[in-house]
Amino acid sequence: MNILILGATGRVGSQIVTYALHESHHVTVLVRTPEKIQINNENLTIIEGNVLNKDDIVRAMHGIDVVISALNTDGTTTLSESMPLIIEAMENEGIKRIITIGTAGILQSRTTPNSLRYQSSESKQRSTRAAKEHHKVYDMLKQSTLEWTIVCPTYLPYGERVGKYRIDRNFLPEGGAEISVPDTAEFSFKQIKASDYIKSRVGIAY
Image 1 (tube, helix red, strand yellow):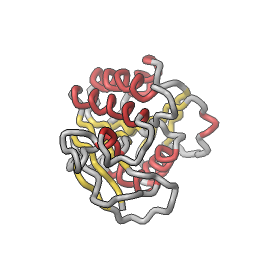
Image 2: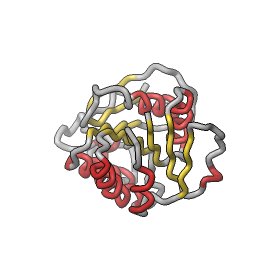
Image 3: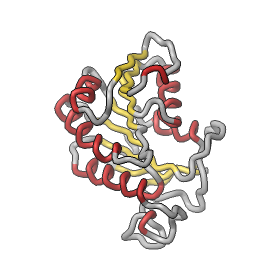
């Protein structure tokens, strides 16, 4: 497959790049600083650019089968500002499938079912800024024609790949407290071939 990975220099994104190349997919990454990608692989195409630049996004989408976005919030509005450009470029290119990395804050609350976790007492996060950014992206994807899946990890230490974890559609698995970066990346990558969670959020935790 031809996979476009956004956020490829981040913790989860860089792991997804490794998994995808390991399975001999062709990987395109759009990065601001190409020097951060320390991989030499004939299946890897590095495009220097910015997800906030419409022309860069359009250029990166040519010939792509599936998009994986591991962009994070980093104290900015990059996430919510780039998603309309990503959706528009995908719809114009006829690319249907997108997998994004969200946050457990935008899953449904078990204690207050009409609210999201970050809006309820269930969330332990003091700041809701990142969750609000992810919430905007969730709303945009819901209104798009795309086949989207938002993988929503809870607390995300680097950790080891365990290979076993619990998943729950639209909710965080009960009592789930953490999930490692490699396991989150592995589950997200596997969604390129899976259709179980199309147009769903997926909570993931041990």
